Length: 84
Image (cartoon, helix red, strand yellow):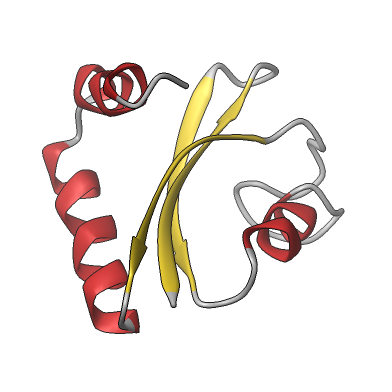
């Protein structure tokens, strides 16, 4: 099983959309670690939304679908729709 997920950082006031076939806990720990990259070093990323998929391709496709919209409103709609 793979996931498409949305994280939020209060420090940046930004969302991050990604996918993983690992556990979501491991992935969030990685984002909150001091690694290179957009999410590294902040340590305040929290999970706001996720969807489960059978395959990596489905999760990747959904990630790209969300990112292509380039819309904070759409991301917040997804989060609100799912009660997070």
